[in-house]
Structures are given as structure tokens and as C-alpha cells.
Length: 406
Image (tube, rainbow, N blue to C red; front, top):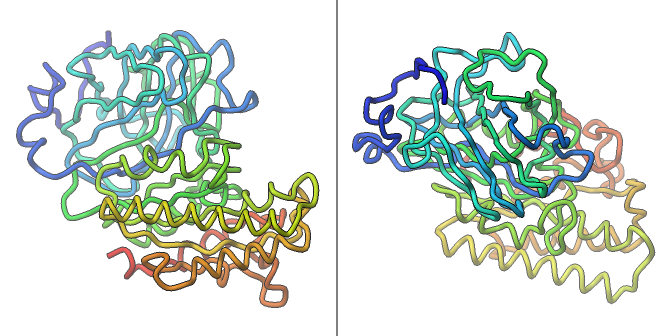
């Protein structure tokens, strides 16, 4: 058990039972404030064997809206055994030291009034509400003491943020000297805020949304740029997975299969920005050329999946904006043949056609090289001909018309 702490702004009812107080429950609806898409990590991104039992994970996240209260969503979405949590807490992260927290803000999380919770395989679990205000763009630390991490882990490898793990129970520690650092998130899929007069924008995509080429701990993905432009008036939830595809599993489950968990199940979602499909095109010809008929079938299947995503999101009252695919000619990994660019142009033409989406965000127009429009602008290229650098992500984030999100 945790020692007696000094939780900030907690009510007596929360301290004794962990249940939401009537004032908190009725004040404002729950809105997704931060999130990450979950998947099974590869061997090079997984927690090592010594971190799978009796370990404390401290992970830093940055909500993009504030609220009068919060709750945390833990995930065992891909676990094949129960996830045993001995305790968890949330606190304000300090900028002066990597794993340091503000002790005065350290607040235990409860699960049906208890510190301990067992999350079944394939499930996610919300903490009880915490009656404490959070501010937009203020870094929070979520600390989790885990008795046993399932052998089949659940994580978000492309965090672009540093997390920390240390054997034993260190929930009450102000700092974690000797902790190991990993640039991944584990077992943590969301923060929700009790917030009025706002909503959430979800960005569903691949590594260009996940932020490959962005600065670690720099919060300079295109979604971060967009969130700061919105000024905390609407959350931006990044649900990108590097290497992800619309149709087939690869790095992470395909976009169609994760739509429910990563978009439709989140509270308060008002808008969806869809930027995905370049990996479907690239993998098609990665190993060998394919026939024109196979190219045509890929375009038809991807755009058909887009139509399904639009229909399912609209049924939930969500506006769906199609983002055009960025150029990727010159990227050696995919060995693109002559028809890859034609495929990209065909998909972008479908995206731009009126009626398919509620609006179009033309990232292709913003990011292409004016002299060679089938290639990424060199000023925005991280160096691999497909991923933007921080300047490119800034241009993308600034290209989204804010009037679409108000």
C-alpha cells in the first residue's frame, strides 16, 4: 500500500472510496484528452524480461485540453494473460528532472475504490474519477506498479517520449534514480478529462501521424502543432502507428480493425482526420512488381475502406476529413515501380472528390516539391523521402483550417 500522501484537491469521498463525487460526475462530460494506439511491440521495443514482474513504470503524457477532473485508461488489449496492477498514481511531471514529479500533486488512482486491479486479456480499464483539475499542455506522469506484465505485451512503441521503469514499488517516490529509460509507452492508452464546451479531434494514421522524424520529447508532431493552434479549446488525439496499413495487419492492427477502439469508443470525439494508405501502396510492390490489375484492386480496396470508415464515424455523429497522401517517390525501402505514383494520385483524386469526406485537408499540396510534385519537398524531408522533419510537421499542422474544427 502507498504511504499517506498529499493528493491535490481530492474530496473526502474519493479518498475513502475512490468513487466519483456527485459534483464531479454531473459537472461536465468526459472527453478524450490524450491517447495512444496500442499494439504488440516487436522484440526490440518490448520491455525486457527483468521488467515484467514487480516493476514501476512512470510515463509522461501531455493532454491537449484541461478539465475539472480526470480518469486514466490502462490497457491489456493484446495481452494473453491477466495484467495485474498493484497500484497506480497520477501526478504533475517536473521539467527540471526527467523522471521527477511534484510530490504535492501525487494522487493515487483507484479502481472501484481499490488500489489493486486485474485487467483481463484483451480488455482496457478506466480508473475511478480523480477530482483534480488538469491544464492543457501540462505534462502528467502516470506511474503504474505492475505485479505481472503479460508475456504478450501491449504498448505504443512510437511514443517520441521517454518513459522510465525501475524494479519494485516506487509510486510514492519523487524521483526514480537508477531507472531505465525507454522511448515507448506501455499499458497506457488514454487520459480523459471532465470538460465542458469542448470535444476531441482524432488523427488516425501511420508513421507520419505517429511522428517519425519528430523530436523525442519535443512534442512537434503535426498533431501537436494543430493542438497548440486550437489552444486547448479542442483536444487532438494522436492515433498513429508507424508502418500501419488500412487493409492488412503489419506494424499494429490494420486501421479498419482498430477503428472502434481507437476512434469510435473514445468519449467526446467530434472530428476524425484520416491520413493513411501509403504503406498499403508501398508494401504492394516492396518485394516485386505486380500487375496493373493488382494495382487497380489495391486502389479500389483502400478507397472502399475509406468509405466504410466515413460511414461508421458519421453514424456516431463524427465529421470525417480526408487527408491526401504525401509523395513518397525515392523511398528505397518500398522499391516503388512506375504505377505507385499513379495509385497515389488515384487515391488522392478519390479523397478530393466532393461528398466522399466532409472536407479535405490537402497535405499533398502543402508538402510536395514544386519542381517534382511526385516527391517530398526537400525542405520538409527528414532524409528518407517519405517522413517529414519538424519543419514539415509544422507546415502540416498549420495547414489544417481551424474553421473545420470549430
